[in-house]
Length: 181
Image (cartoon, rainbow, N blue to C red; front, side, top):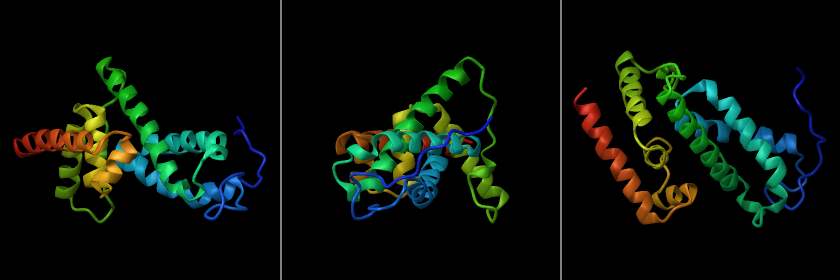
């Protein structure tokens, strides 16, 4: 089956950073960034390509409505977090119904990681699989992506206080679970 193709034309309304870029150029420029966010939030390579496709399909539809053209990168990150949230919630339902195979988180870390590091990362992601999705996302953005608290709140579309609560709740569970493993 052939993938759907789009007419490539300049993206209207997105000046400065993407003025004159066609959609393909926008994709080439930002898809690695979106994939990195997706990979770290989802923890599974097999879902990242679909997430990137979903984000850029939404971008193709909604980019013209972006009010601040210079915010395209941040807007794409926010859209990526929304789609990751949906995928994680769907994953929880599939797992509860025993429709989702147990994942191997070995591909989350780089090839230079030691076996101990790989095991530790896999252990953390297994804990993340069990905590509420919003806590997982906030914690991952803060400690895996290295985002500021303000940026975590922005990406999670919640208040700073809520972001802090989510991060702390996740951190408490991870500390307890990983230290007892």
